[in-house]
Image 1 (tube, rainbow, N blue to C red):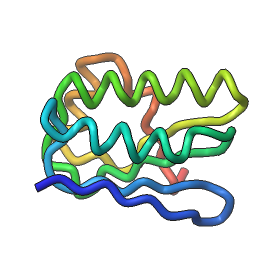
Image 2: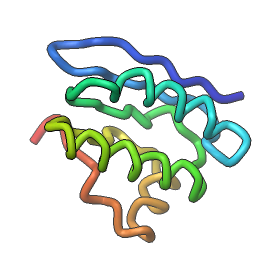
Image 3: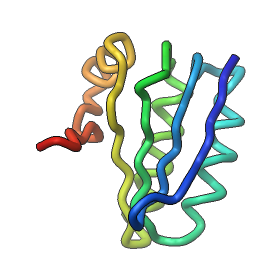
Length: 102
């Protein structure tokens, strides 16, 4: 089961993901992102409960980031689980990962 839930916190939109993000569940993630990236903002994708992500999830992250940057916004990833962090590393997208404690 996949779930994407967004909420506004301290001037940013936090999208919390749970389950597996793959070609079958990517449309739900894309819809959640599209709902918040319509206006420039800071979007944080919390991946602490994401168990898996494939290339369709990566593609959606990159597309949303490009859109937000073009409008003066920002997209970052927080707390990717081990396997999801590895996918980000292999794809060269660790630039998206933000350490909120840094």
